Image (cartoon, rainbow, N blue to C red; front, top):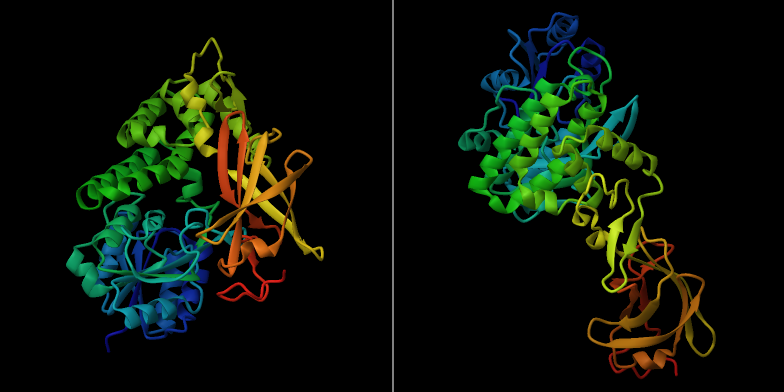
Length: 481
């Protein structure tokens, strides 16, 4: 009988992990599946484990090829797969029991071409959030598309998904050779799909592997590995430029957030940086000046030093970043007639290096932190107490204004200051008569010419603070007077 789902599992010398992976597939609540295990030339005990699963469970099929890499191994598995749906799992990872049942059920319900879900990171046996996927699957969304939900640019892995087999073939998807074979395919699938389902649940446990000859953790800083990563980036950018150019900015920003780290790490450790610097300049040239110009200021400084070949200075800035990972980096004002706001980083206005001030410019990174800690009825008025601050700026706020808004009206409040950024504001609810039921508190601050606005957050709940008018009616006549 034709199985509903085919799971392709390429493996090469993963004996310490493959048993746990295959057990997780055998335990899936969707039991109408086949597991196509592709031995990519293993020389350890991985094949014996796969043979045992194939002998014990008719849903497991084992095939062998000479070592060609995970991309060709996956392609070989696809050719043998019989399922209506396709999925991929790496042999050192784990799939939660209900993952495939949930993903397939969504596709059956919506008719979308692929379904994807959140990812957990297995670190020393403990499940953490995947930092690569952390901003993607905050809530479920059905029948969407990457051009509408552009955060899916960050979803560039193939194994947290189930695909319709007919879509895969119609789109002509196939894995290239190389280490980063999944990134181009994941992006192509998202763009070419008619619609995509996003699940909020974790559907895949991605292991951070520290041992074994093919450990990405051990090899990602090698020159050949970095060259292959650049090749994958170029492949994705060429595809997006042709089929979805509106996604290029988001993809470039992700490369400067995540991928560039491996170049920095390699430069921090190498003895002869010449070839790495040549590669680094090729990376930055591939992304172009717009991507660099819109990067955060500390990243711009790192890129500036790297492209100029200032490796010792780059290492100092990398140490500076790590030392302030918990407390954050400060932004400070400079100038009186025209005040600029700059990252308080090493080498700012260093006469020897002459780094342009715009590299350090952090004005666009500043945001208002506005919090309501308490709101109480005094018998005559409501008294709101809270705190205002500018993120990353250690200065007293010069001026602050507060007002209530229902979306149509604004009611300004008298503000008394407490300390550097504390405030107390009071209002008579009669002033809200005739307005909406729900009011929000908005703040405006000015500090050395820097003007910021924002909605106040609820100090306890964390969401936007809201004031609901007691006894509200559309006429406003039953508001306490």
